[in-house]
Image (cartoon, rainbow, N blue to C red; front, side, top):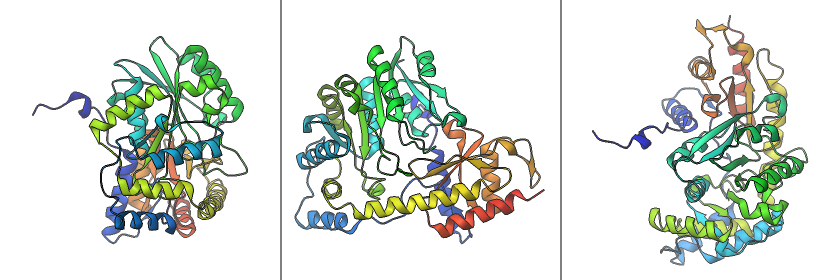
Length: 396
């Protein structure tokens, strides 16, 4: 059978694969605890759901402009001004079918075959595949736990070649939960302006930040870097709206026009009802959002403290998102249940088989000595999962 070599070279998402396996085991009646899902375990707030119901009843079920409704674009502009101190006009906003779609549009708009994008590792599993799908080449910059999983300017400079077109920043990060400071972002901005490089700034977790830390958008650090930045955001994480599939970009008008044109052929408009619900999310009350954030912070503190008390594993305290990267370097080469631990895949499969706990191996994140735990689950599940981890590691 004759098939696309490019499409066949793309690996399936390991995070979704783990989540699917967990759900199947649960459906089969097994006592399994899952920490793989990258979505809040809270329900979408009532006023957002009501807005969607009202939209259906009002007949708002037709095509909208391909790049999104004017009311939602304006709400995004208002949000960017209020939260990030950024001035954008609706013609600079493209509403898409989730932030993943927004990322695909962004890479497609700026890349030609062979162009390079600098990606710090550990990275969210889809970044590199999206770059390849758009005929680009991901250039991986390995970070260290000692440096908070953040790249240095020296590393960036060393990675730049004549084919470099963009630097990718995800702050707060999936999978590490790290957060770049204003000073660190300023250094990146200065370099990007000097070298005339785009910055893809994935800010989907911007409202899930803990310990009094503050999110800074790199686009807010001056007009020159703003013109080179494509902000990626959406409603999925902040408003517990993962299934509604609404993301957006903010960029200069020329890039937005290209993305909107491609989207008009690829998908037409995002879901009209979800757009109305997203308008309600961005313009409505935020009390439930803060309650959700505070709950995540409590879970984060418990998970990190407990995990660091267990022999054989350790982790950093994440500053944002809802993930913990557990370091399993001390287990490498050791034997558990007759199996030698050689990488995160082996560990995760054995942990799921023997302890019935689903975590995501760091291999897909370019972090083979780590596994990712999500604390977007109940405290009861977190305590049970860590109890099982402790028992699992006591096997000799």
